[in-house]
Each structure stands twice: as C-alpha cells, then as structure tokens.
Length: 142
Image (cartoon, rainbow, N blue to C red; front, side):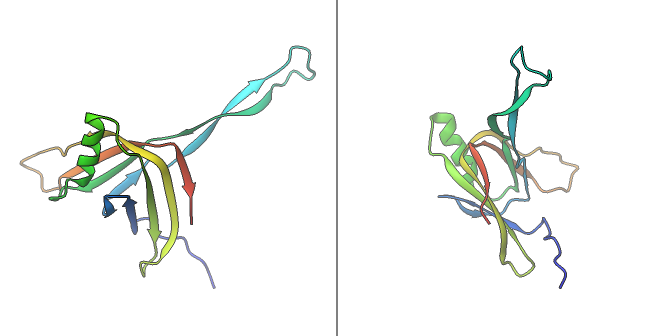
C-alpha cells in the first residue's frame, strides 16, 4: 500500500483560552541554530571547528477572514496594554476524514503585530486580518 503525503489545506489551530480557530493561512514555521566557528591559532590544519550556537525561531503569522469574533485581536490588545499570558499554540494537519495526522506546537507564543484588513470598494475579496506571534520553541508533537 502506497503512502501519500497529506494536503496542506486541511488543518486546525488551537490557541488556549481562544479555542480552535479557523485560519486561512499559517506561515513562518521554522527553526535554526547559529553556527559558531572557533579555531586556536596553533591548530593544524587551519580549519575552524563548528559549534552549535543560539537557537532561533521565526515569528509565525496567522491570517483569517474577518468575522464578528474579536478573540485574537483582544489577545493582541492585552499585550498592547501590558504584558499578558503567553500561550502554547498547536497547528494540527488533518487527513480527508478529519483525523489528526501531524501536529506542531509553538511554545510561549505572544502577539507582536496585528494587521487590519485592507479596504477596496472595487474588490470582491474577503477581508483578511492577521496577527504575527513571537515564540520560544517549535516542536513537532505528532
């Protein structure tokens, strides 16, 4: 039996205290490790050793069509007023039967940027809001 990769358009996002939300796009999931090069002056050959440095995680952006819900915006507004609660956000990839097949969690996430929709009287597109979150870790949990 052949195994095929899953489609990327079936997923759900779980933000604690905000519930499972429908987002049209989630981008920016990546992690990297800085490389530190080190060499003593008397070493032969003159090739530096490569050591692991700081771990870095890109901000993740969530986009969604505007509805009457202001839950994500209110989470951002809390941070505009003062520091608030960080959240572990999970994005779960679903198969054609809505069974969970893979999941990623970003840890200690907090919103750093909110973007309201662009308005255009000649457009027939959906109004899109977006929030960008910083975080301190990315794990594939399933």
